[in-house]
Image 1: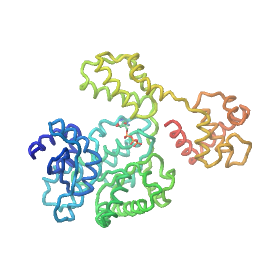
Image 2: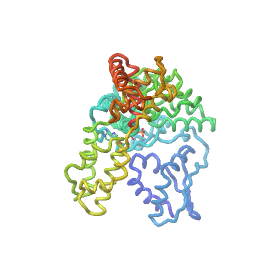
Image 3: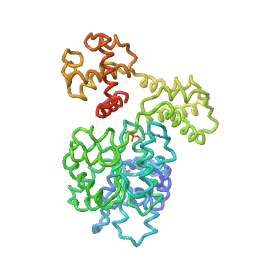
Image 4: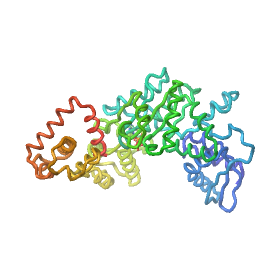
Length: 457
Ligand SMILES: Nc1ncnc2c1ncn2[C@@H]1O[C@H](COP(=O)(O)OP(=O)(O)OP(=O)(O)O)[C@@H](O)[C@H]1O
């Protein structure tokens, strides 16, 4: 294979990986040689090589094979040249246009090595509903890039509710509005990975400098660093340095800062300093809105497909787990219907999505609620059904009664039986007590929200 052939193959990869990824990760690859089924490429840094290898080597291999080259493996090696400091990091996503425009700027200014952004995750494609309107409004405010009004913006919520989507949307918007800003988006896992690599390669000063020199830092899934002491420590210092310089930070996690176990107290309290907003579980209207938007997108891809009335409503009603599952269901349905060339009817939907529908139907049991609540309050499961009356036991028990009443279809006597044979009036009293306390006790409200989220997945 020649360099020229690689040039052509490379262009084809845009379709697979998107333009941003292409510009950041594929274009800089230099083809070295292809021998015995191994295609070798030169990369600017070892981080770059690791990243491309982990994220894009399958795409590259597949594309090379499609073009007729016989490739079993793709390897990346750092170019053999004196290491200039600026060669130690990868270019920032979508920075190519800027790179040509501002060729005179110092090299390190242009090199912010973040994770690739998903081109589909924009504000335009984000459907707003009651459960996410506050998170959306806060994200929009940050994306305007005006004076920093809250720092950090902390977005949290259950699996697949749109945290990553909103973070990418902020990054896209900032890059469009203010291309000179250095926006760094990465997951907490990548933060740790980069930190460990910097330690190993004795480049910790470069690491510090780099992370302290961005204008906007976005870290996804921060709960990942809980319990990882030196990473937490480094994160803490980075965080402080940026806040001191009045740089915007956006963080996401699967739960509120105070609820992340094994996260240092000082980090928890810093994370709570800005605006903490919750992406609530979706409601029916939001799910329907998301499905309608997706169908619009699919119309161009699957021309001629007919969708019967009531199918989207059925899906929005039945698949309540998370948006990722909902999207997956719709994608499968359209692909299947187009393969068999049939109209998407309710019947076809039920057949094609039987497994997903069954999984979504899973009923929550009172035992699961008791177990989760006991774990949350750190009491023994046996105390849920036992006779103890002291408040540290009785209150969690009432919380479990309340959740059993609201999250399962069980009657009060049935719930009573599962709580060690208690009378239905005791259950009613417990439920009322919690309802009363909810009016004044914000900690209790937080606990209930978290538990609901965990139980309803
Ligand atoms: N309000 C929304 N409008 C449109 N799409 C959405 C919305 N919420 C979520 N999605 C879509 O659902 C999928 C999952 O969202 P995302 O990856 O942002 O979830 P997450 O909250 O980061 O989940 P995780 O906890 O797994 O990291 C994505 O494809 C995203 O585009």
